[in-house]
Image 1 (cartoon, rainbow, N blue to C red):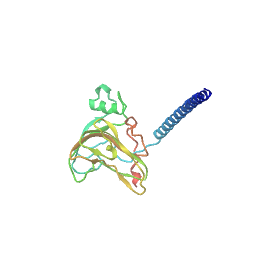
Image 2: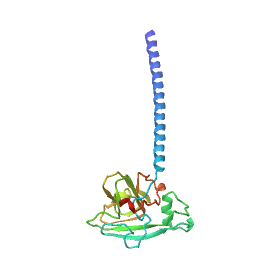
Image 3: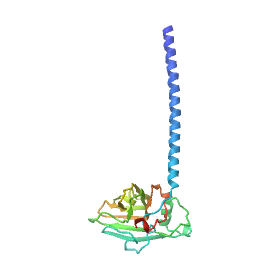
Length: 228
């Protein structure tokens, strides 16, 4: 009986020790998760506080419908159509459904004022030996973020400012590492024989900018001297 009692007490002691250790592990896990959350928040805030300057011209996409937007270049087999002008000072209820859809996706539902008038364009492509689409050349001697607001209507597309485009308005794009003494051609690639996409505000900005639509906008242009 004494032996059984000793064994029982040992089992109970073991159970209490296990519970204590489990409690300590839970507390440690909780502190680690809290520290990770604080670190993530610190990094996100630090990135959002950086000075982001645009490396490419004409983010507003001025130009003549039916032609390539000013200062941009394109592969063959692509038609460009200016669809909608987004102006400042327009009451929300007077904006078109397309405007409202875009601005809502950017976290700006109810927006009356925008910093600068910009345009929504549509590009339609067919098969071509040149698979690249709209692009500019930018300096690669700095890390950069290339992105745009896009809405894929049909077909498939990858890369650059259209990377991860979907059938809903979203900020598509990616980050580029620095390549000393080189340059980037910031163009997406068609992945289907035919396709169509709405897009606006394409830009390459210096540094690693957040790829969240609510953080995107019209960035100050660093100037032509970047490549002088």
